Length: 183
Image (cartoon, rainbow, N blue to C red; front, side, top):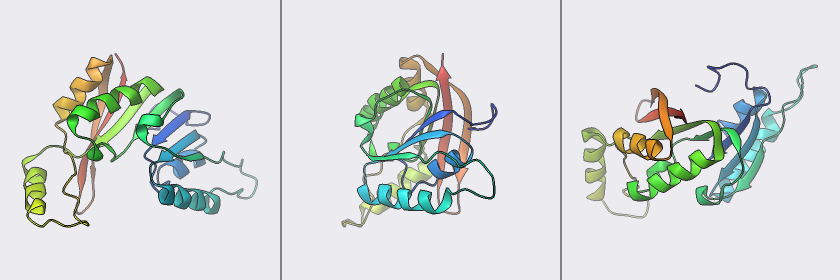
């Protein structure tokens, strides 16, 4: 989705919830000007380390711009970006708060907003209920699932519409992916 409309050279991107930089670093390699943040200082430190190791001059190529990494929660993000990307973070917000977060992220984006979320499906709901039977500090039973219709409604409410839909899959995980643009 990020390169569907051409080169990322000079495109400003906010990677909200950047984790260890697995998106921010490739975006910088593609020429994007990246602002990346995560609530976890340890994740941001690892992202900075990975960026320094992976973003170097390679035999005459132009050096990519190092992403600006910050320790911030989503609510504290500010600025304006061509694109805002928030992958696998909405799982930490109940729908009532996710609506406000989606509105906030949309207010930072000028051209598009890309979100992924754990979809509210029978399969995920069942897994969550099974997980709740085994309480403990290492269990992620507070993961929030979101119906795609609820995410779409939240986007529509702030004047955005879904342009593309996708699915992220691994052997043990899947998430819905949407690209939204101003309506």
